[in-house]
Amino acid sequence: MRQGPICPFMAARKKDNPNYKVIAENRRARYDYAIEDDLECGIVLQGSEVKSLRQGQANIAESYAAVEDGELWLINSYIAPYEQAKTWGHEERRKRKLLVSKKELARLWDATRRKGMTLVPLVLYFNHKGLAKLKLGIARGKKTRDKRATEAKRDWQRQKARLLRERG
Image (cartoon, rainbow, N blue to C red; front, top):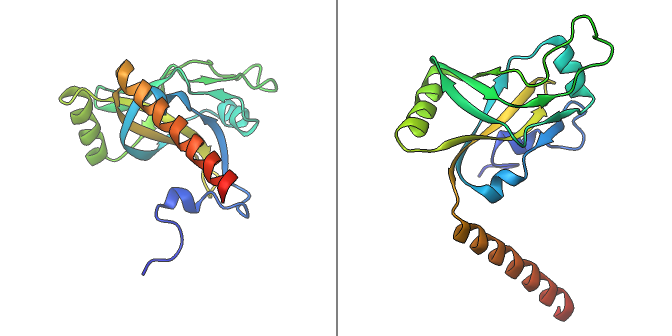
């Protein structure tokens, strides 16, 4: 029988690990999209971008990923400029290359082109080794009625927990 967390992503979240740190989270993604699968990928960054991320100055809420010319790119993500790197700073909303294996890239291309899925960034974080990683979700867009159903289900869970707390 396996002991500990099921996925390695959860293993890195331990409080005793000084390197693990969530930089940016896309909370709206789970509301707007039905996440069917996710994967962890590396991200190519400049030095000033890493310094800015260490300060927690990033936003991935409006960004998305796309397969272009046989490579995976993160588009429209915001990393604030690092004040001490005025001369060798970085562009705030540039395209950033994501690092995945060829097999994963082929699977992502197939999902986006043939099945009509979207690649949505979920979490940008530093892993237990101190490397910047991006958790990417393979998602299908929700219709308005699906969003209402999700909201009703969440409200029912909250109400059920409140009732159990009062009676038990």
